[in-house]
Amino acid sequence: MAAFPEIDKIKFEGPDSTNPLAFRHYDENELVEGKSMKDHLRFGVAYWHTMRGTGADPFGPGTMLRPWEGAEDTVDNAVARAKVAFEFIEKLGAPFYCFHDRDVAPEGKNLAETNKNLDAVVKVLKEQQQRTGIKLLWGTANLFSNPRYVHGAATSCNADAFAHAAAQVKKMLEVTKELGGGGYTFWGGREGYQCIWNTDMKREVDHLAAFMHMAVDYAREIGFTGQFYFEPKPKEPTKHQYDFDSAACINFLRAYGLANHVKMNIETNHATLAGHSVEHELDYAGSQGFLGSIDANAGDLLLGWDTDQFPTDVYLTTKVVLVLLKYGGFTTGGLNFDAKVRRESFEPVDLFHAHIGGMDAFAKGLKIAAAIRADGVLDGMVRDRYSSWDIGIGTEIESGEHNFASLEKYMLEKGDVTPNTSGRQELFENVVNRYVF
Ligand code: XUL
Ligand code: CO
Image (cartoon, rainbow, N blue to C red; front, side, top):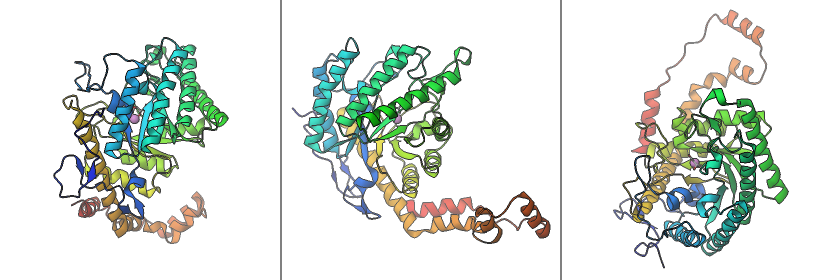
């Protein structure tokens, strides 16, 4: 029985459409810079928010109306839910999905039973993937909800928690491989600390690195060739997360010999929690060769926590796509909507409105970004700003021909710096607006 009987496959109807269940900009076959929108944007649905989000907050329980949900958290319900998930993703027309082990199947009374539960649902996920052609963008393990991870997982003071987390990731690597997943994501749920007095930071960070090495080794052993991702978040649930931002994560990966195995999965709302913009995080990762995938969402700058809203701001999506295209677009990664409908938006149809809005905002952002790139005006203005590096002393410095002594000699002869030109920030902003409206 269909969970969304009144909803047909969402179609592209063009910018003038007022149909709330149609795309106005996302035409999956439209070519932009010679590639289809579908292949550029590689949208994914996050199983945890879309299928498991209840709307609970610290002040009250869940509000979501999900008529397909059974009363208890059983494998039978999990199987029924998996079918609903694929009905939703297929009607939406997203090519990918992502999940944590615990999103799709309930825990059993011990690890063996938990793994058996997971296997039973994975069998159905595989059938549904084959039926629909929908693919797994990445898999991951929930190493933060169960009370055994109260002190963290790989960074726990309790070695048994580390061992249990290792067993979970081992299993999820097998599952991700079985489902043909394109990647595996590490997000350090509670890999951080609340109180420096009770924390051995060096030991915890060393353990995190050892854990990631074990994952890389095991992937090699079983022939899982997907891309590993590391997802930065500066705080929440812990006060200090070790995976703070792109720069901290990349430093960690390089310091511990993981740089060749792991790229970044950048999330908009995590960037803003770190005091950055998402384009900063993407550009930093991209410029260092670590841009892997994106968790697309939006925060609320008036609220200090991870609100995980659907992205509808075209400036935001334009900036994200501009950076993405600058670094050559996705290879294994994609735009996973790590976003949830508001507690007040409790009807099933709201899930469609939310994803359609996000997909349209990115499609429009892609078109704007492509127009900016095609004209080359913005790029040209940036290049002009750095033009002193393309001639004379600038070229010589960049090609390594100088040192402090030779530069002192150059400046003693010249006397002072040639007057600078204006940064023209306002003009840059106006130029961007030419493409937005
Ligand atoms: C939490 C978060 C996670 C990761 C996957 O803030 O973003 O859902 O994306 O564990
Ligand atoms: Co995320």
